[in-house]
Image 1: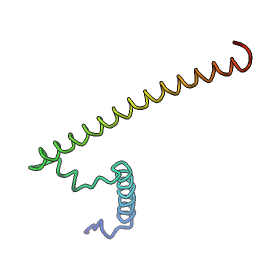
Image 2: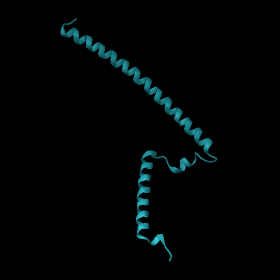
Image 3: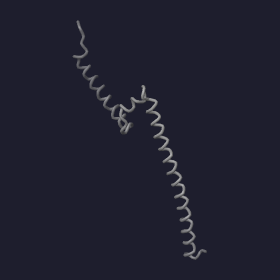
Image 4: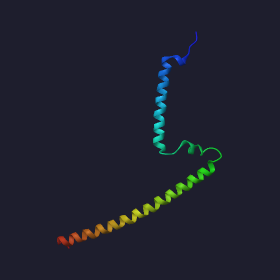
Length: 99
């Protein structure tokens, strides 16, 4: 007696469950990738890998440089805000007559 799993209702349920799981996994990957195409990821392997990774490293270096400059700008701005708050506090004390 031959047993054909493709015709089995249990196999169809397993296939549906597998498809649902694959779709769920793909949605999670899409969420993490945010616009990175699988084709561009495939460049990380093979003959193009050296040039592609060098380009990515250059991009990351530029991003880190930009973040560093933004961090320095935030530090300067925070210092100015702190100075202004100190001046405001002194003026409040002076107006209130505590000085």
